[in-house]
Amino acid sequence: MTDAERQSGFMPGERAGLPHAPGGPLSGLTFAAKDLYDLSGQPTTYGNPDWARTHPAAVATAPAILALAEAGARFVGKTKTVELAFGLTGENVWYGTPLNPAAPDRFPGGSSCGSASVVARGEADIALGSDTGGSVRIPASYCGIYGIRPSWGAVNLTGARGLAPSYDTAGWFAARASVLRLAGDALLPPGGEGPLGPVLRVQEAWMNAQPAIAAALNAGVGAVERVLGSSLQFSLVPEGLETLYEHFRAVQSEEAWATLGAWVTETAPAFGPGVGERFTAARGMAPEKAAAGRAFRQGFRARLSGLLGGGAVLVYPTSPLVAPKLDASAEEQLWAREVTIGVTAIAGMGGLCEVTIPAGTVDDAPVGLSLVAAPGRDRALLALAEQVAERLGLPV
Image (cartoon, rainbow, N blue to C red; front, top):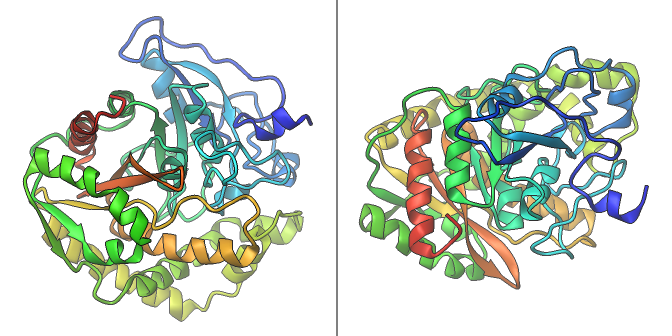
């Protein structure tokens, strides 16, 4: 494999095509899809050669891919993913870690690393990813593009490989806010429009972010306020983001082992750094910890329902950090994972929709600002993101 192939966001080898409608709202646009979505007649590698070796080629194309093609977008290829979508940096030792075009000395973010990379490089207008613990939002922030984690259950995941089903969502990237919204028109169910507000600044997330990142996103918050009015600061997670992370991790681990443990046990696959360790931890997750996590999630969702049901929007840094350097140690990567998922777990635990906007830079690396709304308000949130981007002078 050449260096260019290793740094590409696309899977190596010949790219398969797909018929698309000659007209439609996405006519003239291109799209790619993370290689955990099935494409008829093609292998779905799920980022791991042993998975590809032990599974036949797909016999049907995932509905999410078909929805974009039927709306007129032209398919340009499958993109790389972290192995079994179980990682946040974007590293893949088998197929190559995609380039982060906005910060080439840093990771692109994962697990939807390839999809973020090809959009940031201008090689696709839209790219499908998936998001369980931040796998669209974090690479979007790291690569300086738009990304959405839709409401849990809003987008059809038939024909997509799972990790932790009660958290798994689809998701997609775009370099322009209007294109992100247009893709949502093709993928989301009807409804979800309507007024939003007020704006709520989540105290724990802002305090968790590095000071330079919080400062860099002040202009973004100002743009949100120019659309929806002055923001209010409040405490959403008085238990602490560390507690939220631990409850999220416990449930995710239990589900990841229930979903993939039989294959891991039977196949004994080779894994890249960190992935095998996460599955070992998942196998050993104590049932009582997972049960406590599910109980906490139920209460957390009730809390969010009362807070966001009227249209309120949460605003906070998508990631508390810029993308880690490619030479970051395993310990540094683990720390980044823990402090990041403490924030991304807000939407994950709540089943919320979240859009990240490329609203700033720190140390010449992008940082994203997240807008978060109640389940089902995806279309309204995408429209808001477009308005905010316009006020920030970003690509619309």
